[in-house]
Image (tube, rainbow, N blue to C red; front, side, top):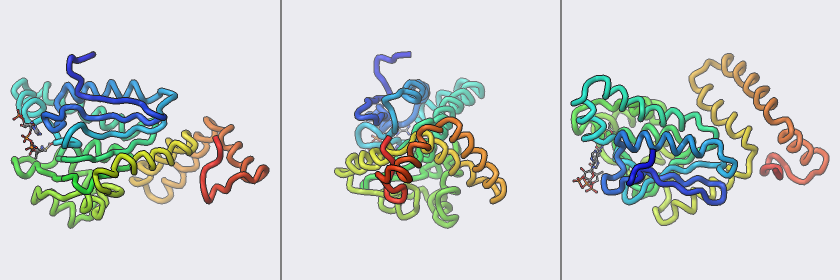
Length: 271
Ligand code: ACO
């Protein structure tokens, strides 16, 4: 599907896919067209050999102003429960796809980030915000609970007190506070955001891609497990990763033990 106006923009430069919410005049709020298009773009990029890292940001002043109150909520509801469920699945579907994406992902939060935006924010493995970015669970301001995963996101990432305050007051926090609360990894001035994200993406690009995928999945999986279950899962995940990447791993050992050309404690082997 190609829309005359594409609600998702992207380009691939030096193995980084820069994907952008592209409804700046609507502050990148997520309507059904954007959600459907985002799934297509993610599919297109996921297994491309020239993509090693995906960065998700927004055009204009917003990262994403959450769900589109008119098109996602009101118009879907007017069509009935089936349309509501369809709209939900379209949104949740690409967030889930992103959560388990083949490549490491980075949210580059350049501006407004509200409510439903916390879904894709959490889906990205890492998140960097502009100091100037503004975050809120604004659901309370218009009379709903933070659904679509947003409550789960703050319950998982924030302390109970911060999560409760954030959800009950709907107050804005800036990028610095978001970093302090661990909603994002770090915040930097907007003018430096892209440079910082590129720096992190380049670090990821230097690592073994099989190990990256295994590691990011393992971190999300073990968070829900007991210690013993995690230990068991990790043995199997390790063996599965070894099966798919015998050569890379052997090369990593070879360069350290035999060639002595690098130290795994200090950096990655030469791919
Ligand atoms: N849903 C529908 N339309 C939206 C949304 C949204 N979430 N956010 C912005 N828009 C539209 C505005 O209605 C406006 O449309 P118009 O040009 O046709 O009038 C346009 O985008 C620009 O928005 P402004 O409000 O004029 O932009 P401004 O920069 O002054 O303010 C802000 C930005 C603070 C983000 C404001 O638009 C806003 O409060 N948006 C809603 C944020 C929100 O609470 N989102 C829902 C979270 S809850 C959830 O996602 C489940």
